[in-house]
Image 1 (cartoon, rainbow, N blue to C red):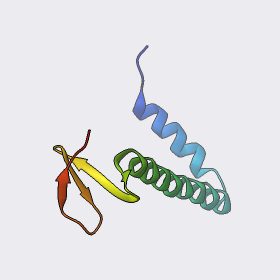
Image 2 (cartoon, helix red, strand yellow; image 1 turned 30 degrees about the vertical axis):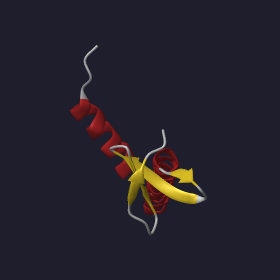
Image 3 (cartoon, rainbow, N blue to C red; image 1 turned 60 degrees about the vertical axis):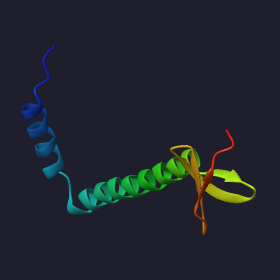
Length: 78
């Protein structure tokens, strides 16, 4: 089944143009909020996956070195 993106895009554009201005603003507001929430959640997940707690401090491990806040590199204990 072939997907005709150009035809689908034109159909969505025609339907969207038929909406009132208030409805278009509402839709774009929801889209914007969705993008902001997605970025915040993505950042939180990325932070949780990359940061590990060592002796009560947040550290990142890179090339068997631990880089902690306000400190240089130290050998990893893994």
